Length: 523
Image (cartoon, rainbow, N blue to C red):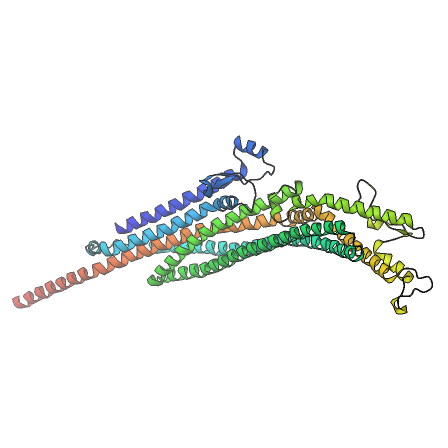
């Protein structure tokens, strides 16, 4: 009766896991192929970003989260992590079932020992009792080894793709901050030159100082957020990768040893390995939940990148790449373009020998076009080279020679102005691209074209293989559990039958001796 009861418990476990697994597959099919009717369509029509982030939020009394993709919102993270609840729940239930089942075994061993000793007859067990479980165990061992290889391969490729995507995003943020630093550096040089040469340029100097300070603060914020997110994401990916690799590698060794010990009927080692594999199975279910959550997060990220291409100024990714805030710098950029355009025109009006190339088109666009200079013009950065032969040389104690009419101080001032202005012009295309968010769009376009599809493919491969591995582990562990207790029952029955059999043999031998003695006495 004890063996039948334990077998029924194991069958109930198999039934429970099968029901939960089928429920998960059905739920995912529905969530993939359809959306919530009626209300979901209305909600999506009112949201600027169309995504699939409407999920249950455990931090908000299990209400629906409708805030969209927002990596700075704890409710987004909790609702996304909660998508792996099937893996977490099955893993915990499996572990609790193992604890309960172990308690039942211990209780039956010590509390029902006297009842077992009363059994005197052992049911016959044919070779099929041992052959079929071993064949099934071998099949599931092969399936488990195959699934483990797929998990390791998918995990490695997913981590590689994820790191590539993260590096592209963070490098783009670093490039944006670098462009801002180059621009503010040129603005500070112009300010310093103004202060050194013109004491009455206080208003212009104050404007350049405040503008440069604002841009520097923005660049510092971008750089700080980029470093923080890079560190957190890389640390998380590394931890998940290492723990998964170690767990799956240990699982490979454990299931191999389990099959060997089960085939050789090494009971003590087999029992220990069953406990270890039971724990590893629970971990596999937990990892399945984790990678399923990562799959959802990867899909959300790719959707957010697509939305960014449509509207870069109203997107949650602005916490790393604030295009909406950089857009505020566009009027300043237009003022700078207009100012340089007017200065160059004034200079060209006062000179007739040579013309300075105006790097901007006329109003109202003031587009930067440095490569469209006519052949008879010079660039702003080349002005010092033209004026240097006309400046007074320091070697002559500041006296001007023949044809030299520009003082040393004036030449140094002009050189400082033009050099700073050229540095500003060199940084202008980057600033213009940053304000228009073109560099960010290009980076995200690269991710969408080259990396999003493989990223989602490999994470789907990982959690799918982990699901397959978890199910295979469940059946493998239960097969060896049933087989172990089946053999243990027969082993204990053998021990209980042997004393009774020896007593019967002694009685039979005594009777035969008495009969033989009586026969000899008669003779």
